[in-house]
Length: 572
Image 1 (tube, one colour):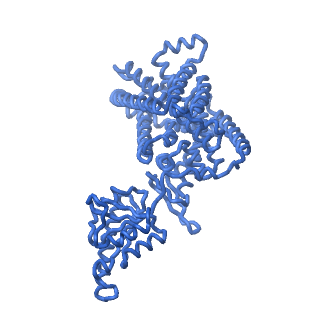
Image 2: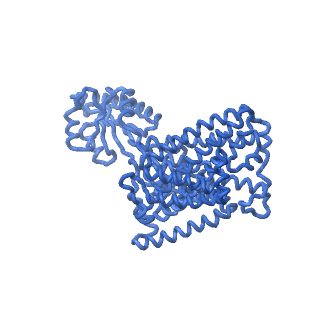
Image 3: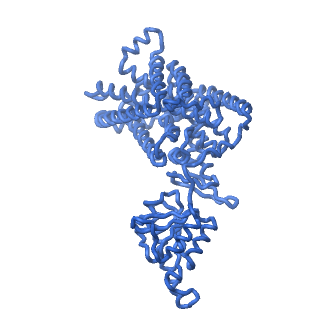
């Protein structure tokens, strides 16, 4: 959800690194980016290994042949997979996206074919309830750094919580591709929300099905292809279904590995662009338009890590890097909500608490606070139970920060400089526009339709009616005429408020104002005051830009005086 708001607001490659730079400074941005580099690089290795595990289930003969050579089967297969992804991404993002899209769609279809028969044939609700009463595995796991005085099963449960966050691996790649996305304001929020739904349904579906049919013990015995082992228990279709789910597992894991290649290449290139890393990394291939240097370099690093063929080891490093970057993401999200500049957000995470502090308003997004607390707890658990992640991850951050400080001194920039933030501009700002509505004449429905068709929600709307005595042949100094003018103002205000309320209900910020006086003078005062950046006039559908004759002369004088400040909206 946080990425769904920030990515279309600041559509730059780099994701959390860019948001941290904008909200804080270059040092915080580098730390977030450097941690995410670790996560992305490990993502390439981790899911290439997982894909290799499912591949070995599909073609065990190939795996046995590699084993006879004295080589780690999963490692060798992963090397082949990563090499292929490097080539595809080298040739262009279009091919990479098409491959990932095809893999994911096919994988989701297969998942549906696996889940439905599973719940119909082998799921046992009483077994599910029985399994839910088991709090963690009592077995000692070699990869867990246990603490004295805490039951083994509790520690295993807490350890598993950190592993579960890998379900959303690659979600940040949506932000990395923001700069290459057409109409990011429309597509990125939709993609982020759909991915959350898809991941949640997939993870919950398989988790409930697995412990409600074969139990956690059976699943844990087949780490490399656990879901295939589950489907093998299906009556009649078990043999075929196991192969089918292994194919789905292979497809989805391979697609996840590809997100790592896409993400790390764009992230590192972005860091080179903003001088967080040497500019050498920000080299775009003249023909393929891809950051080929980063694709090759970090693809090779991922390939090297995958060659060990150790899934738990690789997973520990991924979790550490991802959690550090997510923690900074939540802080940057809260900070960016409180920037002084008026930023247009194509989609905004609902739920916000506003506090008055020192004459200003501090906005606290509820999702950001919940996310920060949740990620902080997971990071603490990771530091406690993941020895490799704790040691190697901390070493990775330390080395990176030292190298960064040395590099920045060499190029004459402060480590904690905020100059890069000035280059990171939002997709748009909030604009204040006053819409001139003819009193009494304009229909409320027509005004609402005109506004919604002509202006999006980056415009903060003030509906304005001006009761001009000259237009109504009335004299403000005459008591009787003055009463009639006040009556017209009351009617106009009531009608404007009706329109404003309808606009507010569909997400616009709208208010209404009615003035009595000379139309030309009042519009000039509103523009000169700086309160409104534009004045919008509603015109008839006549095929010509022509204003009603009764006050066209005054309006034309205003238009000629304030070039670029007047908008004309076609009446619906």
